[in-house]
Image (tube, rainbow, N blue to C red; front, side, top):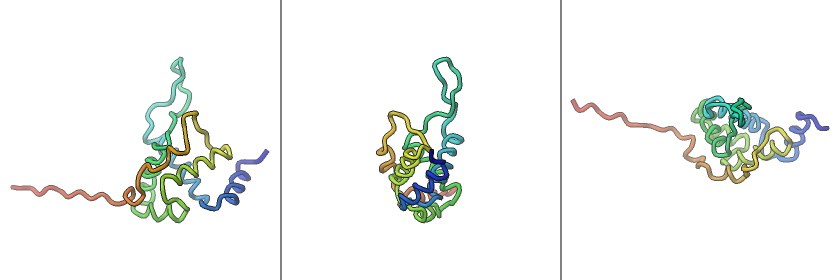
Length: 137
C-alpha cells in the first residue's frame, strides 16, 4: 500500500502543472470553507451530528478566493499563478488529483466540471473600491 506522502510525491512527479503549495492551498481553502462558510454540522436521519457539511465545487472556488485574499491580499492572483493556478478549472484539477490519490473524497453528485468558469480570475482578486458619498451639508 502506498503511503499518502508517497502518493503525493508520485502525483507531483506525474502532473508537473502544479506545485505542492497549490495542493496545500486547496486543503486550507476547504478547511476555510468549513470554518467560515458552512454553518452547522451534517446530521443523519436520527439528528445525530455526523461531520462537516459537504462543500460543492462552486463553494470551494469561492472559499479559495476568500481565503486567498485573506492570506495574500491583492497578490493572490500572482501567488496562485506561481503555483500553476490560473483559473477555477485549475482548482478542479487539483481537487480531482487529490481524489484520485484518495486524499479527498467526492459525493455522487460532484463532477469535475463543477469548477469550470465559476469566476473570472482577472476580476476575482482585484481591489473593490467604493466612493464615499459626499456630505451635502
